[in-house]
Length: 115
Length: 189
Image 1 (cartoon, rainbow over the protein chains, first blue to last red):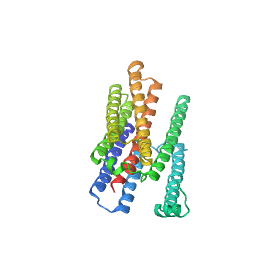
Image 2: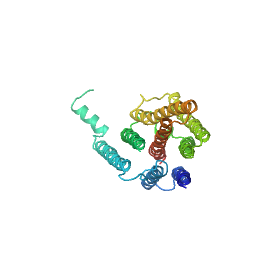
Image 3: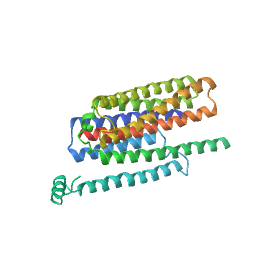
Image 4: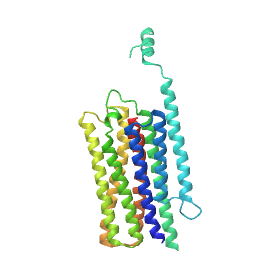
């Protein structure tokens, strides 16, 4: 009985993953929504697919307590969020605050700085 | 009981490795996200992205991940033939995936660009290439494992290795979901 449900788990995971992949692909190719919304939607679909595969393929969270696999996974996600969100945030800010090229050239000419 | 406990430790140890690998991929993703527009007059991701080809790649890898699951189900049913059959099928699908990724790389290089062209291409090749390298290592592992299963049979050690390999393979599919979404699909917006 338990083994049969395992086959079912892989099947459900596969079908759901196919659905999510197809949805985000079709959304992007047909440009259903505009920029910001579309990015949010396909990121959401990606995260949903991550959860589906973690549960149905890797059987995360189905171990007996204490759930070290799950705890370690969550702490890794926490670190990843800090690294990824932090990098994008800081670097975009730096980019935004960069002196534009024209002003840069103007200053260099005025101050007689040659590269 | 003793044996069972030591197996649990092996699986947890491998899980820790997978999570640190995930961290490495996360850093590569962050690098890509930061450098994605620094194309330095070279090719952009929009020109690299070939929607049908990337969708095919994704479906192939997803199917191979599912077939690997079928191998584990056969293993639990103690069906030796089907375990090996599904492992070989996974191997073939993985090889097809790797071939498609390679031809994409070669296509970029044939146009006269490489990882030295721009910061964007460096980060692109590093991120996608690292994933491809993992797939290649997984394929070598799979090949050796099938040979071991055929030669030595379904020993306790080999059974454990099949389960570890399945974790590795599902993990690589999860990383690919994000390459598909963040690297490819987002460029089409």
